[in-house]
Image (cartoon, rainbow, N blue to C red):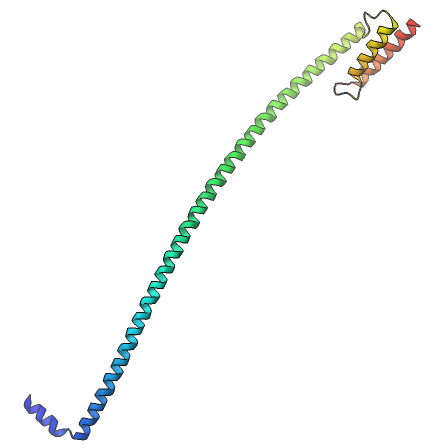
Length: 172
């Protein structure tokens, strides 16, 4: 090896050695510069990594909050839907009850009208013996059966008036 170094040093001139040294200095500067750039790039990547991790954590927390809100809204919507369904069921039950009551009332009204017609056969003014009692009974009956009343019936009101006129003529 000594021999190789001696021969190499003989072959290299002083000028070539200076060039070689200058090249080595430049090369070491370039390597140092690239090392610094590489170090800066690594630091930049570390900062970006930390930034992205922080942003991911923030987004993850935000996503969790949004998920909780969504779950709460779904529960709220389910409760509202359940309340509405129960309300509709109750309305249906109430409607059926109302229809039954309406049918029963209609049946009762028919029975009452039939009873009034039977009363008409017997006379609306049965038991009346004087014109004052006749007029009072007429007013009472018209108040009940006048067509403007809820239970009023035009036909019955006409029958009452007709019978009243006949009985009034009899008393005069």
